[in-house]
Image (spheres, helix red, strand yellow):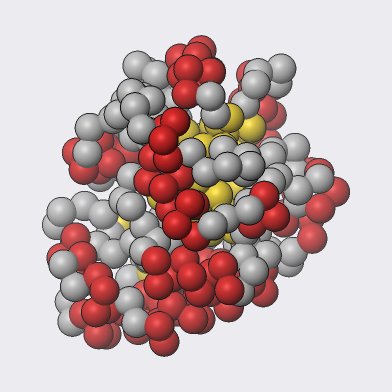
Length: 285
């Protein structure tokens, strides 16, 4: 595995956002009782191999899922799976390893790259709404520092609709980075994420049976969204959203789980192969 070549990649942005954390300090005191602790959002890279990931998971006493980027070559990652042959080769490398096999789907056309039967061999698919359609229909990455969202209220109106579209049209198991905002708006996070804006996203997750990621990198979602999600009966997953270094600790995930009083029934677990979203949901972009 190699690091992403472009500073506009998600992994590089996360590397700049915060240094990777490898220590297990805090896990014993914050670990919620009786629920499976799985970090489904671990990426490999040049300095963090599969062997490193397995050893770190054993050290922390947790399970992990390895998510490789998948989609068309337009997506700017050094390693991106773009066809059945590449995806099957990657699945074969993960076979026999004590990890869950997943992909982080890029843009809304990723499913066209693969056959449904091959995607169904994965344990899960996750994706987010951090790349949105521009005025001309083009893909706009919102995490680079140069991105300017414009009027906040107008942006939020479009952004909520985009979140719903991603959730409803992509066959996902997990929606990651939920409620993420581009940097210029983050200072107004609580004011912008009103209940009226959160509810359509919660409803879309409920309709599609998509799990909500509790994200240790950005420390989102916040409690108002999480309480709505729990009340709606949604499933939750943990994610370190590791960047270009080793996997971050998931203390935030576990502290949040304790605050929410999550039980085993609340936690995401991969569906059987014949019940994967790619097979049971209509794919539409």
